[in-house]
Length: 256
Image (cartoon, rainbow, N blue to C red):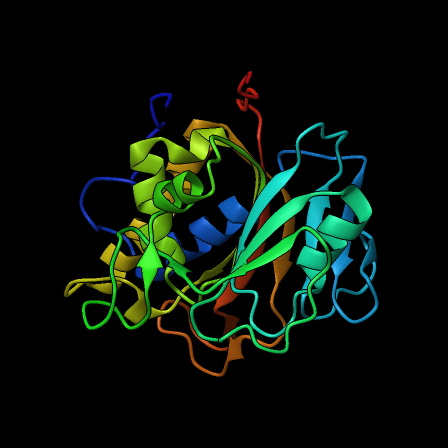
């Protein structure tokens, strides 16, 4: 990973209002530095569509490529496998859809889509150590003999932070071409007794470190169902949850 260009929000004393750091972070993630002329929204009740139209819940982006070996992991399938099914049906991808909160019974899955009752985190853990059985990304990739991913979709209700920190530090994300993730700015998603300044810095450092790895945002969507009347970081109503689509510009396919 390249050296991270550091600023006062990445390191140093907290000699600024926390709202300044929070707004700076939002500006950073809303900046689309990458474009994809073949980007589409897929999944959801109407099957997605061209980007720029209304996006209902369950719809996620993908930057369409001519994949010779399309294998994908998703997390947070819940009871809506429409994104996973669309990837399999439209692009002939093999998809492993994960969710430890459901049994998978009753899911209608397309050919090439597999359900796995495990969650994603920054460690391998099972109850009672963790609320649900969770695994590191590297562990789950190894379990299905994957060395790289063309797409990784993550919606894990706050566990994304421990997953991202570990996957950045271990270098596992270097072998991921596209990362779709919903980030949750909830105070209870971080371990330890952290101040508001420390929370925002923890999140901001992850975005900056992803950028240093080569991840560039091509899609940003503020979840309209996630706004709260009071936000601890800025006055008034603000969204807690933001869906981001990244392309890894440093991704090099592994030759088999």
